[in-house]
Length: 123
Image (tube, rainbow, N blue to C red):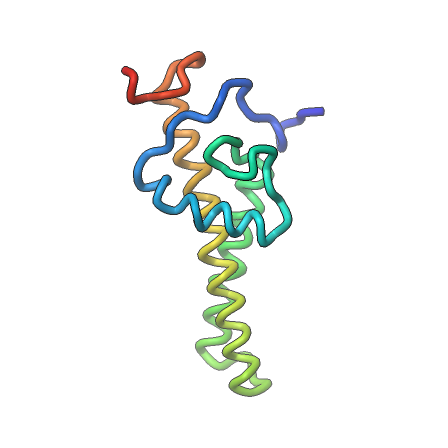
């Protein structure tokens, strides 16, 4: 049952702008890594839900904080922990930011299209 956190348009996903299409492989890989693969297995054909968008934005912030902590040496358990924290933070930051960018691209492409038009290049 759809609610405000899972509600998406009833129409197909519009063609993504180039800048969003470029990060689509990273977004799909991150969704796979998080065991959150949409029905079509790609965000090219499945909407980013509001809940996924907000969780990805929060994860990007957390990833950035983790990278900052690791790089500034605040993880004082030694260099190995700092390297692992920096790598984990970079994966979290880059993957979740890619999901956010795809979500923004989907919404912008959807606004360019009419409600029944799934391809903005036809206009």
